[in-house]
Length: 255
Image 1 (tube, rainbow, N blue to C red):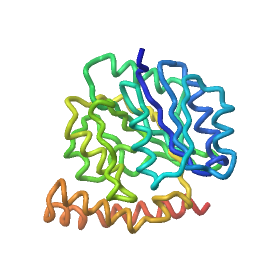
Image 2 (cartoon, rainbow, N blue to C red):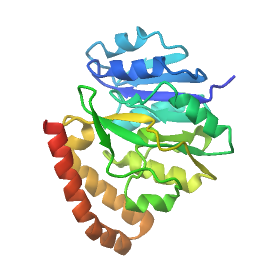
Image 3 (cartoon, rainbow, N blue to C red):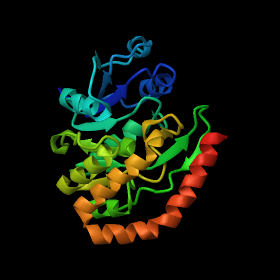
Image 4 (cartoon, helix red, strand yellow):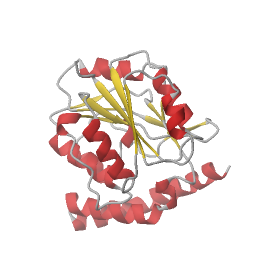
């Protein structure tokens, strides 16, 4: 019998942060899931730590890949669950009842996407507050005109409608993927205001290290799906929000 959830973690030399991810999965009170780990041939002990975690229904592959989103595509191909959840190394479920809450929402109707709120944490595990963009109670593809309102890790998609990530985008393929999922979705279920994901904020993360390139990619994606002129106008309006959030994140990461 296929599991309800496929939790997918992509790793590369993540031994120093993978522990919190593994712990958050192992303590889930709802057990109808499989765990798929796609490792990029790590040279540290990431894989041995994963295998030693004792998480049931686990599959691990470790081989070279063409980057983050290529590895995510491998995870999608390996997944057997009804829904897929991408939980990056260092990120974690916010509480032991997260999968149970997602399962309860899935049981309410034929949702193609389940989603919720995210809280930020630093490398010491300290809570930093919520994202500057909060997940709305009602979500459509047009919602993402304003940016990535739902964190990728808090965006749970029915596997049957989940397309491969577009490898033309090196830093923002997750944003484009979410839009395509929303365009295919017949219904989106919000699991409530209590956060479901702890998102690790670190200056060494791929997005932070390539912030400008990521924003340029995201701008192109917005133009593609929402039109050039409307996107340019929205970005004029985004500037104060962007500068405020950049100052907040620099202060947070640097403390």
